[in-house]
Length: 539
Image (cartoon, rainbow, N blue to C red; front, side, top):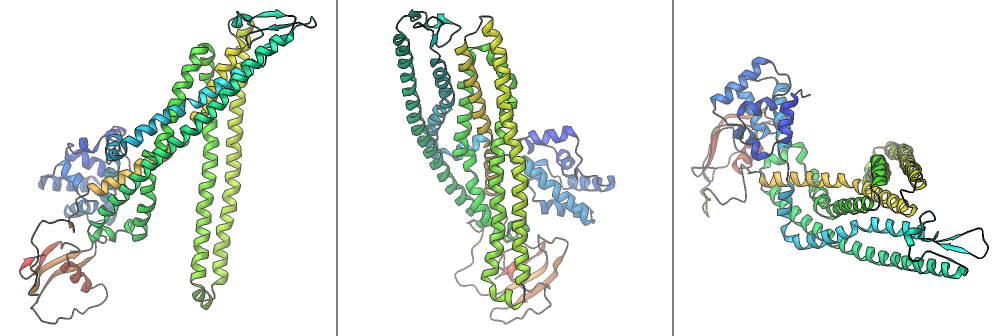
């Protein structure tokens, strides 16, 4: 629907909320009215903004409905154009309200000690995969330590590499007793086996430490975000809850789901991202130190390998997520049908409910087939890239070994370290969406918490009614339209006076404004014009 110029779009996308507040009103209007409104109507809105002497910050501070009212004041009567203005401001506010990681970390200050400990464990965890690959490749080389030669009863002790005996220069020997060679092999193999055990124990400790600290920090932050969200929701005006997106179910889902998603930004998701970064740093460092030439070759095909690993992880995660969603829908239908069994039976809707339930299961089956096919291709591509890396790396390395410029053991070490590193980073990258979801959930929480409610029930400002009121009620030329229906005027110049102790009946058809008068008296809303008074005080 929008047709913004690329320069303006880039400006909005890259701006912070603080920078945008210094924009001139023309820039704000240029973004808000991106849809091709008639030139005359654009000019009408711009003239009204200048007449009211509104700044860019003033426009941004408006609610979308207030901006829609401004456009209406400017003479825009087409409901479609009014909606465009409202949508434009919503889009602008949504693009500008980006939460910086600095603010997230400040909010996470009570858990800094836990995050520091978790970061240490995640950093150590990042070195596990490269360390395992290095140990594994060395073990493979060790089994070729003893090389038999045609002469019976004689073996040659090489340094884990039959083409480079100088690697074990001090130990290289031709021995009549084959046991000497096997003894050296056994010694090295036992040491490396012990290293595998050490890696296993260290990994267990590191995993427990990383998950425990980050999950605990994330859970504590979840509790505080949930409390902050609930406080922010509780102080919103009633008009906030009239909006379709702010139903009780939607807000309850925000409290339950969005608050839990913040763990993707500061909990286990953050730990996983740190782990992935450190895996790359340690793995690439080891690979380039051992053989920088082979490392460059592997790096050339590494993006494809990483994509393959990511596709595998995405395939597994997407299947489980969508299956749960479809089964939940089917379960919801079954639950409602069982709880309302009498109603279903009295209306003869058994077949209809059964068909709805079966339809959900059919969708589950379709999703399973589709995801199974996509997942199969994802796994196939992942394995293809892995074996492609084997082919290219070993073909190039064989040429260098034949020329005497590289040792076979170095080939194995460099290859396995970088391949395992790439696979580890690719799998970790699949958790990146959790980080984005966590930041998005926090953006909503912070925006709602920062919103200054026009009718704040927690505010102590203003006059307070006396302990015993007289009960004199008066409406003077009250105009009112519900914020969710600004085009429908509920009250128009309504004036009424009710004396203390007087009984008054408000009579009228549905929607004529009877309950609206009570709502205004309770100050659930502010009138668009006029005023409501209690004992002479404007409520």
